[in-house]
Image (cartoon, rainbow, N blue to C red):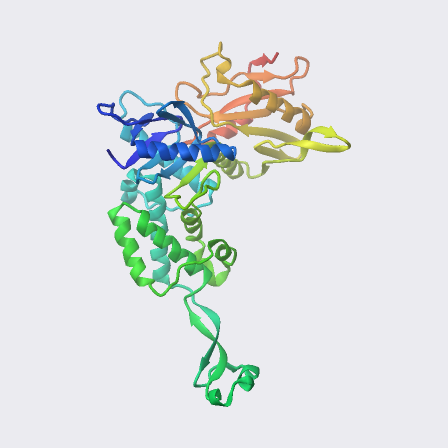
Length: 439
């Protein structure tokens, strides 16, 4: 059985057995030891309020809305991709995986502010890399570029005893020495060396890469860089060294590699897990990635609008003369007297399913009503944004009215095409369509 399993959101993971079907991106079979490790992680996440897996049977797990990569104790790596495209009859699993990987790369680049650069056709083969190998590849490319341009050194203050004078003599210590040690000088001086927080963190990330990569190309480059940086010590306090990471004109070359170093060393997880084993663990909530991706493109498209994320100026209740329970819409845009509240939902809806209310949830509509009332006083529309789906959700739904007597209290439900983000501008400012009264 392969030690790399690639699945999508909401896929099932079952324990493999003799004669079990071949794994697909929506239902994969893993070893018993890997399954038990995921069950332990699931219990740990649940205690902290994060839902990454849920039991769907005695020997079956169902994934939730987290994407990325998980490594178990037995060495199995599970790559979790977004569930964004429907599988066409003419498409293979490999084609769908390539599309979803490329989408996740774009969303991570925007959400984590990664300085990702792709050279075009020469790098098409990288699309086949799992997400963690892509991250490692970007880190190594930036590190190689940094070494070619020159690592930054720094002065370190050193206190030592020598038989010769160098730097500054520590007179008090020297005077207190016994006559037999008068020929020994306690001195203090600066050494110009490569040992500085930025270099220590990069070296520590390189050590992680050397152990975790399974790409022969990445392993070879990592070992070469390791030999060239043997004099750099590893970081003994990663959190403290990140606080001391400096920026400025002399360290501008370090700006590109910092996000990749943070990504590798922090090993993103929904919650902090107990114990010594973490593996290569990078998990991201798709709801948050989608929100950041939409907000990024709105800022780019609506340059004359003020775009704010996670606004929190309004509360839904007043209790004992103070406001409680904040209302935090995902995106709030404003231009002069025009205000619009937008909320992103990483859910798949079907505009052809009118009897099922398109797949919209009561809680989402009630949430938008609260935004309309408290942020806009029902004077402008609120907008729900869902991912675009070919043949399922490719145009805005007829607008919904919160109030039969006021056509300003409207709710729009619009698609966001992740491949054509500029289309959203036309949907936001489209004229009023057929209105459905909410009851």
